[in-house]
Length: 261
Image (cartoon, rainbow, N blue to C red; front, side):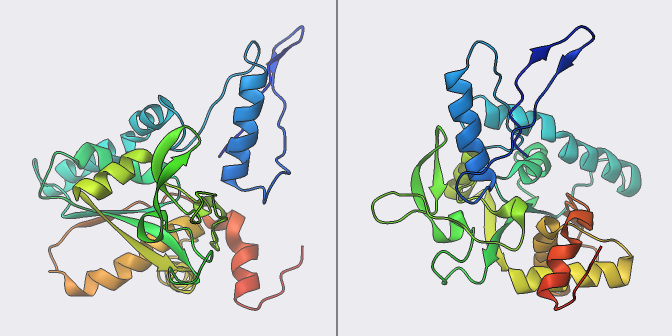
C-alpha cells in the first residue's frame, strides 16, 4: 500500500512516522494524493514510494520490475514440473492499480501462446454508475497522479470515487502499462462483481482450506467461469496475491454474520 515516511535521525537509528490518511474516503487514491503533496512540499527530507504500477515515471516501471519475480518463478516452476519450454496457457490476476498482475504478466508478454487476463473489480455491476472500479471496462483515458491511463471520470474530467468490496481494488484508475496492453490487444480485461468474488472466496475456503484475500477472489471467480470450458490439459496460473485475514470481517458483514472480538 502507500506509506509516507519522514526520516528522523536519532542516536541509534533512522526512524519513520506512519501518517494516516483522512482526506476523501481514505482509499489508495487519497493516500497517493497526500503522499505526493507531502513529497513536493518537503523534497529535502522526504522520499516518495508507491507499491503499485501507477503514478509518475519511474514508479510503474520500478514496481513492475520488482514484481516480475512472480512471473519468473512461474516459468521456473513450470519447467521443473511440466518440462523445459512448457508455458502456462493462461495467466490470470486481479487488478486495482495492477502491480501483482503486471508482476505475473510481464515475463510472458513476448510469448504469444500465453493468454493474459486481468480481472477488475466490477462492484455492483459495471452498468451501475459509480458502483465499480473497472476503469478499463467502464472508464476512459485521462490523467491522474502524473500518468495518462484509463480512469473513472465524469464528463468534465473530474475523478469519480470507485466502489468495491475489496479495499485493495478500490482505485479509480489502472497502471498505464495495463492501458497499453489493453489498447494493443495483448491482454484481455474483464470485470467480476462483489457477489461473484464472495462466492469464489467461500469456495476456496470450503474446498482448499485457503482463506484468500478479496482481491484474488475476483481472479478466482473468473477462473471458475472459464475453467469448465477449457481442455483438461490447459494450464491456468492464477495469482493468489493475498491472504484473507484482513477481510474476514468484511466478508462476514456481507454474508450477514456478526463477528465480535
